[in-house]
Length: 229
Length: 231
Image (cartoon, rainbow over all chains, first blue to last red; front, side, top):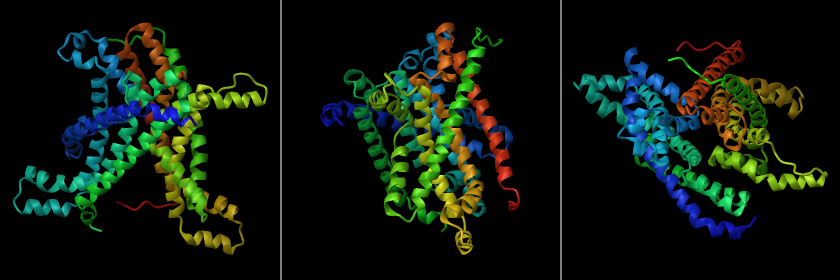
């Protein structure tokens, strides 16, 4: 193992790690915002409300992220309407394509987590809220969602770690995030083992910090106390 | 609008077959690794526990794509030195072998946890009954624990297999001619990226649906004789 090379390229790898963190952070936050209405609709009692989010979730969970990324980055350019449209400056940059795809992808998974969490809220608490004269919308915002957020948080933290790993796919559309940076460095140094090892260590450290962070958040939100155990 | 594949239909079909082969061979590697990992993690020996724990933690913390790249590009010098030992020049892992090992490694790390849960879920009394009958430890595992484990582990393994099947797309990065690689080739010829990547997406969806149906039957078969509680 050639440690000098690893140390020499550490600053460049940190740059890549920063971009990885940026991609993941934007994707999981934007994905969460997108997933909230979708999860609520998915948990609806009416089939016509459920159908659309169901199809969306089925498509995004049933196909590889790589296909989705290529569909957005290479595929959209097939249509003249897109190329002449106002969004073209965004849709042609790999950065925005990666963010859009990762957001749409993770939103499907988070919506499914949220559906499970909403359906796990005890029926009695909803009935209690309704008996107190709260409207359906009020019950949703003050009782069901805060409760579902705590039930779904552990699964959400898993999803964030999965997105951290999935962000490595952004390197296939020429983005220089951690994996992309590692591949660029290897093209110059011809030392795949050392550089990939270093990149792997970066991922491990980031994952470790994220897991710790979510543990703290769970304690702060008193997730354990809410599980009725 | 009719779907025009520009004569790339058979190539895509061949790619689908390659994806299936890759998924199944990675599955068999992963199942063995997962079983070994779970055995190590539940064994009474501290070093073995540590080994199993380290394996599943490290492999799960690093992206699958990085494993694919690391095993494909990282073993070049190792393999050529092994080749020299036996007098074979230019020995290297093929993209298929590298993909099988990398995806099997990742599957195994997650399967370790699934199998460990299944082993722990089997009542202690069964093991003690085996010991009282004078069965040896490997025999107890083979005859008592393993057959009962499947039923508990199956739903988890099914989920992992579906993840594995989607991860096979990553092996296109090192040039294996599976669905994604074949679609990319078709795209360069036809200049219709959306059409071909959408076709690829629907092939993956179809494979996922087939796997779901297969899992349903396997689970039904594995839970013969168990009454599901009415809820």
